[in-house]
Length: 455
Length: 120
Image (cartoon, rainbow over all chains, first blue to last red; front, side):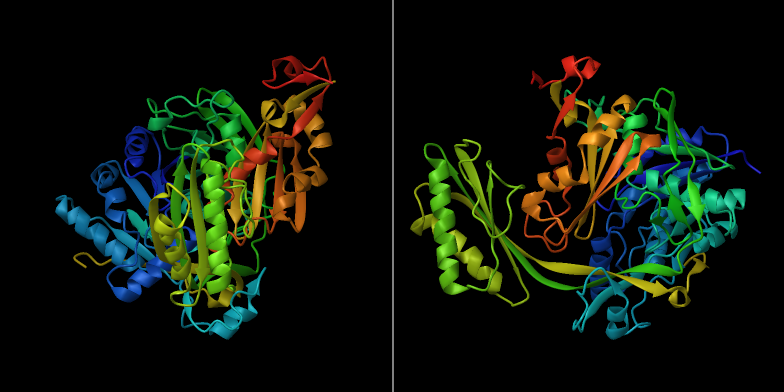
């Protein structure tokens, strides 16, 4: 059995850099041991958008950047036996697997062995009423007839099966992000259900890699307080894990960024609630005994993850129609800009009280208060002493056309509002609302399927 | 005693899940864990975010990591899929936490090296 497994993080979200994986692959190719490259590209909303796309075109519904993530590194990964595990299958892992096979063909490569995972899609298995009964932490689903997407977070098991069957590339839909790293470790080290501390270590490893550069200097820099060298060329992370579950986080030589106690601890706690009980499908991870040690330049050792038996239920994200979000902006600049912006906001709100009193409206004054204000109040446009204010109005409604009333009123400020109103931009876009449900494990039917050659 | 800002002593990072915000607070020097533990309490953090009306604020202390995790419920105006604001994730909010003033003993090395300090 290998002593050390190497796992690189190639992407941390759907919109991540598509050239980030290149240096990671080059570094992995020089490592001695089983090597994997993971892509995490599937946020809660991303999957629902993919479901909508699959409804429109049954051959789509996977991450639209799939080819841009895969094409630059596919030949190098296959040549160096770096196996790829990614959730870029989104709502259609089979179609994504076929697309990767196409890319390999176009590049003139020997057809790779590609597996895809299904069984996360709950649509058709549970009625809206049954999902409503399982919703936690809210009541969004009550009375909602149309479920756009309902997907379970699967665990590592089907990915392990695919790797055991020799897959060089594993394409998943919704799985726990951390399972993308846990599965290769279970495959190599033969960790089993019941090895809770090691499953916890593998889950922690996935958690550390799943946001890409967020552990190597991204989402961290604060000039003068927390400086990061060459952030423009930040290197994405590589984890080295031994059979006991000790993790060393590093990054490719020659890249920007930094890996030290501070970047690692910030990421350990990212999106964590109770650090003693991080719920994953394969294990409950307890972070309270984790230790972090700097062991070299840009090298940090993380140890001490503890595990408890996996939860009895699986989390599912359920998405429903969220209506339409409308936003419109207009600028005021120069002398007395703050007062003119304030007058413009008052005019729009007065008009809306007459025309659509039920519509909740948010007003921000970009250049003065654009983040820290609260909905339902008019921001203090003079707060920063700014002479350059961009007003932003936003509203959301399930009623067709309702938000257009607001956008029309903002546009009308051009001729009928204060002096010097400039640069109106307006747009609407459909919104998805999401709820969390806890689902009994018997509804999960995870399968690993090998894509047939030539498919 | 000397006053410094929390950002002179610690880092912070926001994360979200739905309408719930968490902020990891990491001591730059583990020696400051106890002074931060004593002063950056749940009540004080609830105060910082009062305008967002948190329904619950919980602090988890992680002495091994010289860090804390704050969890604030219902402060994201519905979260990224529902908020009308520009920052539905709450990604910018960690910097509000770092604006808390902290009292240090005058002989603390940071008491003279902090960027914004005054003797009180």
